[in-house]
Length: 284
Image 1 (cartoon, rainbow, N blue to C red):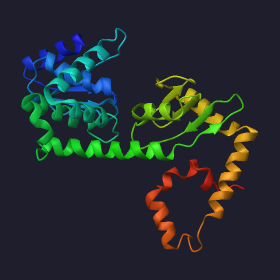
Image 2 (cartoon, rainbow, N blue to C red; image 1 turned 90 degrees about the horizontal axis):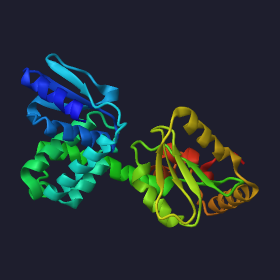
Image 3 (tube, one colour; image 1 turned 90 degrees about the vertical axis):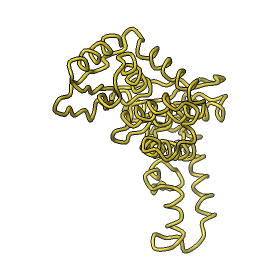
Image 4 (cartoon, rainbow, N blue to C red; image 1 turned 60 degrees about the vertical axis):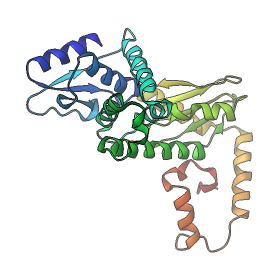
């Protein structure tokens, strides 16, 4: 991180504006904010962009954070978040973690601007809801919070022959690292894994553990883990069949695609999650 901060400082000293390129991950975004502070950068002359949408403008120099072989990125991110929590409070710090999980375009710069304002106004940040930085930031937090609730509601597990519960879930935001503790509490005595092939991340839990491990995946590993959902054991197939029969027995007439009941189900249970719900599986 020292190299990146030196590059930023040198570019600013030469009259250039700077683009700091980071990954769509909490530690990378926070480290990017930290680099701008280490370089004593004027916030009007530096911006953060995600690597997948980096586009340099005229008069700008691109500075990449690089890898984290020496764990300096995580260390710097922890310092930045700790300092922000002391300045603005725990609630605002938790909101930063939520916002960093967003897939929205421009997320790193929105977080950067919000944190810059927070370091300037301190504890007043929580009530400073009308500022442009706060409005854009609040939109990210709302999207991720909603998707976290969807994740808690609509993840469905399949029990495979070795006793492990497996689930494949593809949220619109990177929510699995945020909800792992919820599933660890609910399934404390079970071994399970939830795979997100879209964000190439998984959470793993061993029976008796209080927390989940969050692991980044490559595409082949994600595909291999996801394929295990099709290995349901006999007991699992029986439970799914019983659940489908119960769901069908409780269904009210007039709930087809052209009726009001269908609209309500689609509203409360987004259709993008239906493929993972046994009760809505069209197969017999």
